[in-house]
Length: 136
Image 1 (tube, rainbow, N blue to C red):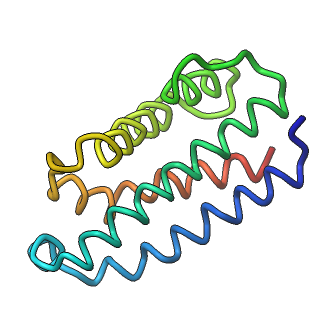
Image 2 (cartoon, rainbow, N blue to C red; image 1 turned 90 degrees about the vertical axis):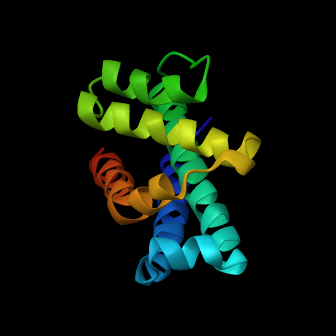
């Protein structure tokens, strides 16, 4: 069973990866694509940030004893059904699960325009999610 300490630890982990990702905002999309070390590190940290967000959402579902999800994306829809997060945030976080799957399985097909957009705009969605969960 999940308790508050588990949720707090998961929030801390997500924040840690968001802070690391801030370092990569200084690079242009071209610099990211052309530098294999930056590209690889950024992909990995984005993967971990999204996975940590998924883990946090799963912990909230377990703590609140909500229904069990059949897929990772469904985690965020359950939180929306239970009125924990709004619909617009639900859809954005579900899309991040899709992005995580691309990094995991279709890494040769990564669109770096999307990576760059997530780095500069999408991380705010994770920050908003953390704020909502912290208030629970």
